Length: 528
Ligand SMILES: O=P(O)(O)OC[C@H]1O[C@](O)(CO)[C@@H](O)[C@@H]1O
Image (cartoon, rainbow, N blue to C red; front, side, top):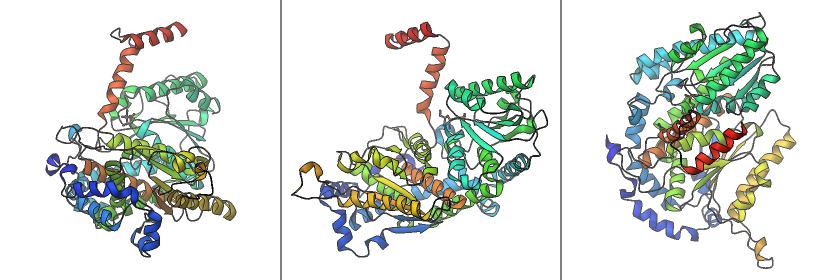
């Protein structure tokens, strides 16, 4: 594979970019904007109800041109075709990576030679529709003959974050009767307090786990099953209509006791953090309706087509990825902030943390050598304006370079004009103030702002299923492009295994412990 020998630092433009990075602190973005009337036009892109203004970045035309050459020399084009056509690009797990197939049209899937996947996807979409329709219409009955009022999604990581984000972001479309709850952490207080407010007769648990082996999810499921059994006198809650399993390991769901007809499947070629488009989206379809779930897929598909077919210069995911590489590899930024100015997108930073950091938090390349430049940044964030009143001080006057994605809505049917204007104007003001700063020699130095802090402004026309889908797909592809540039496998996550194994060893009383951990275990054991 071409990508196995690729090394971004050996690119013909690497040294030139490094030289430009040395003088970059001397660039004033506000001067660039003043001097070039076309900059905003040149540095803006629109697709699928999203518009990106990246004109406030610390880049000149020359830097952008070199970054485009950097990506042209990379294996991106080859890898992107492999992604869409189902070649085995997740080499360490010997799998293709086909989340894009979940939102592609059957004709496209045929063209890409994905006939088998196309049939599998159609079958499971049919299940999502049938099951969600039944639950929403009230035809799905609990063991005592009552219809469902509450869904509890038990899952963690990719089996939680996507559905939780989507249900909250798209609450405008929520079913009136049915409430969706999400329990991910194994902290017993969470499942206890969630169930405490629910009625078992009208509650349905969706046990979401790709592997069906995840400790936290299985323990939460056991607690929920006990609750149903005790309250409803059931012999096995798992085998009752109160449990649905969503998994790529149906055999494990059957072993637990879930009925065959209550299992929805997906496949090992859907990564956990890329799975909201699959049956893992069942709780989304229940919450907002299957047609709206399809609209999310349609928005993502539009972004897929854009990503696959546009030139690099016009390609929104590629541009975001290149800007990220510029900051990480050349200006040595260590983190990247995502600030949605929309309270319903509160969970977006957490979602993107898994998407980006589990994908590109890697230090070994595809040919098993150690990387020789930094890879995925630390992703963090919070909604605006809340963040303005906590950590924005550091963004404005701190010592770290932190590129920011501001994400806002052009209009919001759930807000009022007044609130929406105040919210969104605040976002524009922050982006402008971070860039321009303020130098005033009549003021004490602590009241001066250096400015020149870079940010993107990404506007969604409205927060509707299509733009939501497009936004998530945009970030998926950004992460993919960066993975190609850094030559890492963005689709495995071996780093999380050691901690899981150690926790299991500790639970089983393994005595091979370092003295600090042994001491901590002794304290815990003495207090339980
Ligand atoms: O869906 P599962 O198999 O329960 O896994 C949950 C999460 O755990 C991880 O494997 C990390 O531990 C994630 O990649 C995944 O999304």
